[in-house]
Image (cartoon, rainbow, N blue to C red; front, side, top):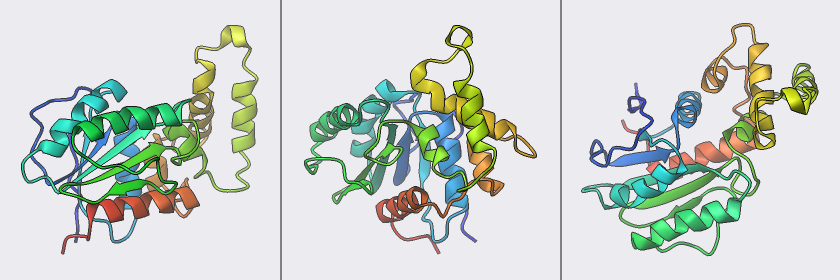
Length: 221
């Protein structure tokens, strides 16, 4: 039976990273955790190595070393769009062009893949088009008609501004974690996928899984 190969968790990018043929660069451990559990819930998934690098600045620095590594066959880049999808795309595109990767004019709606040696893929959370981050992606996996989700939104929105400890741009993160706290066994975002609290048949989840399969190739025998 296939078993995925995962990195140990790290909040720092190490330039001399473990030489793997297929790697997915992610910003941090939350991204790694979500991808790992989504992959485990998906069929016919090829193996690859996940490397959390400790934020977007480190992600940009990691791109060229990852692409230029000896015997590399595929490099995936997973980043949050935050409030500026086009700006994030431009920042990643600059690093990729510096590594001689010929990119299309813009990010593709179902994830970008550039054929070459290595093959290179880019996915901006949540859906390659919208502003947001991985919490928006997770929000789209909450089952339709879930009775708690509207209450979680209402609770977070109802916290007076003077009492809030989170920035307005992080409101979705607060709502997701309120919702997660109401589960039978409160879990992290990735574990909620494994526990079937989240719907991995949602369109954005299946598109993301298809992007991973296309990027990293056929599953190992």
